[in-house]
Image 1: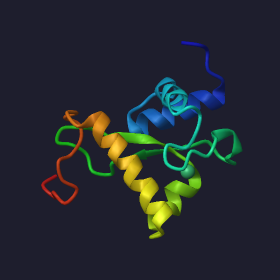
Image 2 (image 1 turned 60 degrees about the horizontal axis):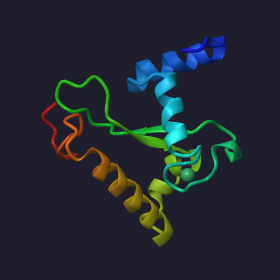
Image 3 (image 1 turned 180 degrees about the vertical axis):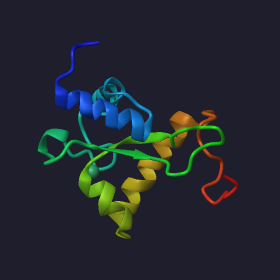
Length: 118
Ligand SMILES: [Zn+2]
């Protein structure tokens, strides 16, 4: 692992304590996503802020953090999810389907978002 700057150390701490991932995990995800928003494919370099960590808000039983789905731009994280346009619906379905396919047998994913047992 390379030496982190103070800013990177702070980001690593934030990622660990909020999402249960390290800065190294974040950077690997970013590379896997070809340095683009996982939802709309906007290049991270064109975003004013670094890509946001999109995750399940519901945790699986015994899990400390909700499963991370991907890194998305500010617009997708804040606005796109509220839109009901064909383009936004199409992008969201595509994104969720890709995530489901990659994690179908992953135990850390809650079976139901409506389950309120924990
Ligand atoms: Zn986006």
